[in-house]
Image 1 (cartoon, one colour):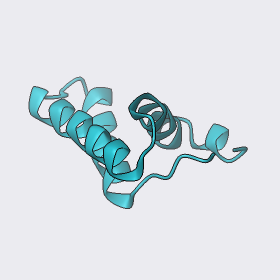
Image 2 (image 1 turned 120 degrees about the horizontal axis):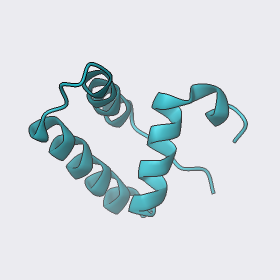
Image 3 (image 1 turned 180 degrees about the horizontal axis):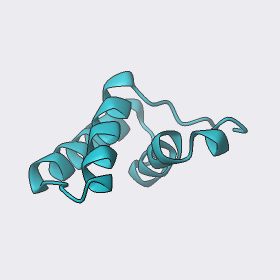
Length: 68
């Protein structure tokens, strides 16, 4: 089963990843991403861990995500 990701979730992770790359990730940003991952997983009936994994691949390693 393919993991479905919302545009909002991808944008939140992109913002967090950009902050992390600049060494300025805030607790608030990290918490917002984690809360959104949890809410998305619950709303869609997907594993929270699989959602987070798919999200990180989609944002951080998009070429790898193309194969799935």
